[in-house]
Length: 131
View 1 (cartoon, helix red, strand yellow):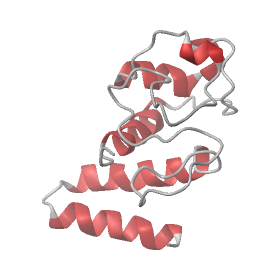
View 2 (cartoon, one colour):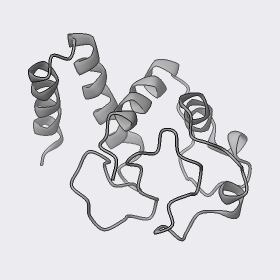
View 3 (cartoon, rainbow, N blue to C red):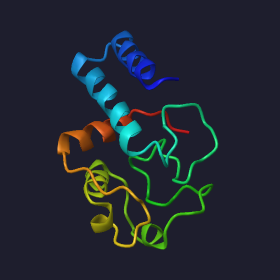
């Protein structure tokens, strides 16, 4: 599905479910941010299940213990030993500066300095169906 079509469907779904305009806009922003920062390595958590990419699946990540998906075997030892639970605050810190939040991480993202963009991305991840 093309990115623009997907964003339109997210907005339509948000309106149909009675989501406020602000929440629907944040969902669309989160989808665009996911496409920009994450999709090259991670499957979209809103998409139908598929083969994993180089990064682990992110569906249901908010509230999960870091490196806890048993089906994914390529977590860095730094992430496996971090003891982190992916709360919204922990994800925000990780997205802001992955190498600072988890020294030794293998995640290639440089970081997102904009707090509202991090919040929109986290809201997008949080809204994904759990698998």
